[in-house]
Image (tube, rainbow, N blue to C red; front, side, top):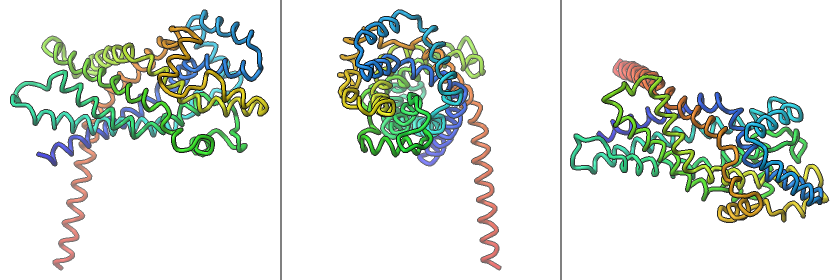
Length: 356
């Protein structure tokens, strides 16, 4: 029974990892734009601090807050295409795919094991696991995933918000070069920047899976919850509920991780202003400090900057994830069965050789 649960967890982990790669690759340009939008006020504040022009800062802050989100997204897209090239929309895609594959694999593995463990604790095995049980399983899986993959997302956010064509060493802005630069500038702790906010965000996938499982339990008598269309719709509703309830922490996490990068961008523009930039109010000491400064400097609405686009990106991502995960499960099972057969045949041949 234990071996069976481990095999099931491995199948779920592999299917989730493959589905996560497909979903992330399909929505990554929008992910980059959303991250830029979330940190856009911070970047502008840093640039204005370097120019020592407080009047421009106030004017730009008002302008950023008044413009619609759609206008902001198109403006960011235009600036990236004009100044940095279309490939910048995919900057950090490599580590993001690695991070999402690792994230989804770890998440689904621990989620499956946690479900099996919690099922074993119940006295009445005939009833499905309760919403609270799904929530606990999702929270345990999310905590393990967050701690393991935070360094990937720090480097990815750095690459997404890095406007330079070359890094401080004169090399291209790649995952390896960004990692080395980050280590040199801030040390080991930099790779866990925003971890507290990320751990709080464990509730996001927990809420997502809670809503998804609850919807399936409520609707399975009326609709076929296994079809691609219904899985897509249920996944979209679940992700929307999770994102709406946790979005301010998503923004703060992006700000915290991007604040490491702001020094690099400004230093490449002007070394003489580096001290003023490092002391900028837009560099945050932690989650609570980020909340306080964002509300004070930019208003409460800054906590929801990029919400519409984020909802679109996460809903598409989550829906594709659920659809492709269900499609990958039989493929992965067949793959593991084929591996087992090959292993059996090789073992049989080796035994025959020994007997001869």
